[in-house]
Length: 230
Image (tube, rainbow, N blue to C red; front, top):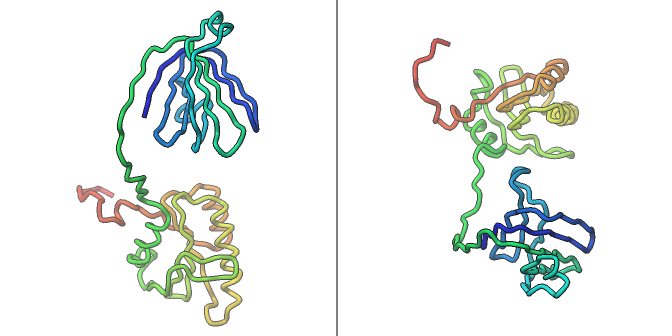
C-alpha cells in the first residue's frame, strides 16, 4: 500500500461528475488497484475513490498546469467503464509504501448464527421444561430460527442481535402460518435478542409474544464469575 499526503484537487468523471477543490488530503493506493482520497474527518468513508480493477498513470503537468502550480498528474482509469479519477498534485508532504501481506479477513463474533447455535444448545434459557425440536424450521415465507417444545406446547423463536419492530413483525407472520398446522398448534412466540428496543417489546407483549434478553458472553461461558449482589 502506498500512502501519500498531498495538497491536491480531484475530479471524477464518468457515470457521475464530482470535484474536490484544492486541499491537503491522504491518498491511498492499494495493491488491488483501488485509489481512495481521504480527508481528516468524515470517519472511515473516503471523499472519493476508484474501485478495482483500475489502472493508474502518473505524468508531468502540461505548461498550463505548471503555471497553476501543479507538480504531478495522476490519472486513474476504471477497466470496466469510462470512469476516470484525475488528481492534480500541487505538493507532496509525505510518500511511503508498505507491504501489508495477506489479510486473513474479518471474523465476526456474536452474529445471529452464533446466537442461534448457542441458544439451541442452551434451550433451557427459555425456561424450565423447554427442549429443542429443530433449527431453521422451514415455512413458506422463510425459516423460523428455532422451534422448541415448551411446557404448554410448541414455541417459535426469532433471534436478533438487536431486537426491533421489524423482528416482531417477522415473528408474527411466522406464528400466523405455524398456527395453521394442526400438528404444531398452538404455537407461542419468543422474541430473543441481545438488546430489545422498548417499542419492539411493547409490540411483542401486546401480541402475546414473550421477550427474552440474551447475554452472549455468558452463553459463551466467558462471563466473569465475580460475586454479585443481584
